[in-house]
Length: 223
Image (cartoon, rainbow, N blue to C red):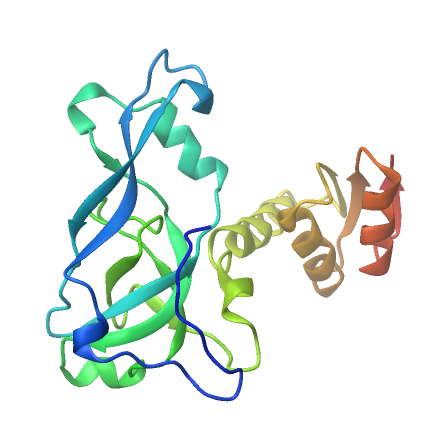
């Protein structure tokens, strides 16, 4: 997670004045893949860069949290020398603190809690601030959900939906076996599967993971 310093009440959306938005920010970048065999080989540095300014139709998001997905770290240690520095993080969540104006930004005014997806490779969610297209790259989150819980709103849910859709397209299958089933994707699969008349055979390593899945209503668990 990327730490931030603002405070807020659950009943009041946070706001910042233009003078409170710093001219510079920090972000994480990959500067070398090392041997290129694992994340442990990578060189990761903290880079200080100008805080991005939102253009018309964009908003500036102060990042609250960002997940680490396999799709993230696979690109780090398989990267090539001509791609450095690589900005890190594909998705995250935060609060809109400024807009660049334009009709589309009314969708997410200042103070809106949002999830966002980074596209184009120029910005990453392991940054203190990001600018995002107000229509295609950010998604308003419910007011009654802590924004820290919204960091994985995109990659994992779509992965779970994709797994079930792929299984259904096979035609004859009504069940799938899922390893590492106590993961976020595994938990989402157990919530979605009953809606699609699918059974999940969950494989986990520990008894406490079995208990977690049982509390979600999972029927078939192998430890």
